[in-house]
Structure formats: structure tokens, C-alpha cells
Length: 69
Image (cartoon, rainbow, N blue to C red; front, top):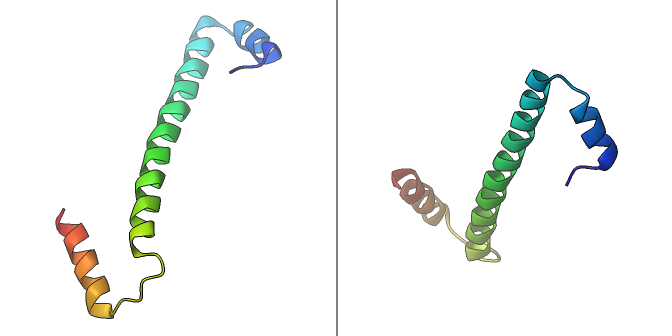
């Protein structure tokens, strides 16, 4: 949500400048959504191995499987 004073400033811009601002805002919002999903997947993966003692061979195997996917 955009504060009223920011909307006034955006509305005061030239149409081309408004287009750039809106495009940047949308880009940041999309990037944030994607990053959030990636972070959630990473956290889920971390929970799978949390508190588990593994050998280097097990770790290497997990890394190798992930690189093949």
C-alpha cells in the first residue's frame, strides 16, 4: 500500500516517469515474492537435516543429488 503523500508525489511526475516508477514497484514486488518462495523451500530443506549428524559421504551424496536435479 502506498501512503497518500507518496501518491501525490507520483501523480506530480510526468507520465513517462510515472510509468517507470510503477514498473519498478511491480518489479520489486515480483522479485520479493519469488525470493520468499525460494526462502521457504530452503527453510524446508534445512529442517529435513536439522539436528542430524551426517558423514561427509552423506553430505556429498546430497549435494550430488541436488546438482543432478
